[in-house]
Structures are given as structure tokens and as C-alpha cells.
Amino acid sequence: MSDKKENVRETILHEIEPVWNEESRVLILGTMPSPASRNAGFFYMHPQNRFWKVVPEIFDEALKLPNNAPDRLAAIAERREFLLRHNLALWDVLASCDIQGAADSSIKNAKPNDFTELFEKSKIRHVFCTGKTSFNLWKKFCAAQYEERFGLTCECLPSTSPANAAWSMERLVAEYKKICYHSRYDSDIRNK
Image 1 (cartoon, rainbow, N blue to C red):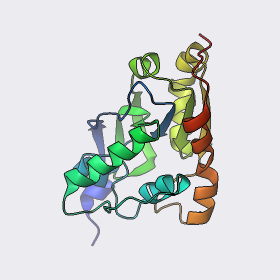
Image 2 (image 1 turned 180 degrees about the vertical axis):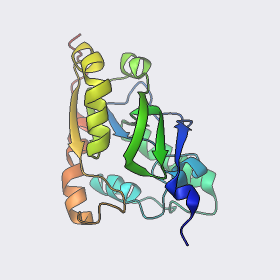
Image 3 (image 1 turned 180 degrees about the horizontal axis):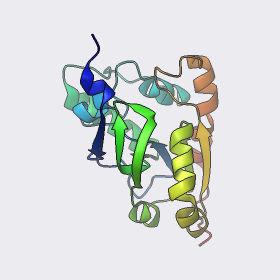
């Protein structure tokens, strides 16, 4: 018998703080944390999500602790340190929505996060969305408000979700490699 909670759309408020600092050059954007990520208190923490395998691999690294490590706080600290060391910021497009489980396709009543402070106080020039839903929501709610004002470009990357099994690790890594260039070699000059 299926879990009835999985079939019910719930109103979810995004409660995970974004990861960034003034040196961040690239913003990686998801849609909304999955139930596993909300329970863990950090992004992409479902044990089968490949995000924390793909992104370190594009920098020729690997994380020591798995998503479901017994010491959850150490796993989160390792991920934060990795992101900031590589000038990466991580957040989600939505501040709240009605959603069924982790199904992006079920999202209703979406409300975006306010990215103003993040862009004003960092060196972010490139936004990479981790899937079509986050990309479409960025374009719908955020592109007009932020892209020209802050000189941003936005690209859609394939999802690392286990639901996107058609994409192998090798293909995901190849697509995500473009993050490396922008996190390392972007100009510090802003055209405001």
C-alpha cells in the first residue's frame, strides 16, 4: 500500500539558508528541497541524488562523507566548505510552494526567493539551474528582475535527481564542467 502522505500536496516553506559569500561567482539553483533534503537541513541530501558526486568530480575531487552519513552536521560542513572554496553559491528558486513529495511537476502557488542581497554582495555573474523546472521558474519569476540589472547569464543543466536516470554520471559530469570555468576565471568587473 502506498504512503498517503506522498500523494498529498503540501505547502512547503524553504527553510535552508543559501550557501554563498562575497567571493561566490556562480549560483547553482535547484527548485525546492526534497523531503530528504528538508529532513537533513541541506541541499541535495537524498542518498540517490547524484549532485554531490557530480559537482566535486568536475573539480577532480570527491567528498569523504556520503549524503546519509551518521554525522549529518559533518557532511553538511564538508559540502559548505567545498562550495565556498570553489566560489560556488547554492540555493533554490522558490521560497515556498505547494508540492507533492519531491515532484517538481506537482508545484503550485510558487513564490520565488529574493536574490537581491546575494547578487549585490557577491561576484556572481552566472546562474546554473539544475533541471528544467528550476530554469523555467527562474525565467518566469526572476530573469527580468535580476539578469540585466546584475549582468547575469542563466543556463539549464540536467537534473541530478534519481528520476533523471537517462543521464549517466559521465554525461552529467560533462555538462556540469562548464561551472568550473565560470567559478575560476570570470572577470571581477561588473557591468552595472
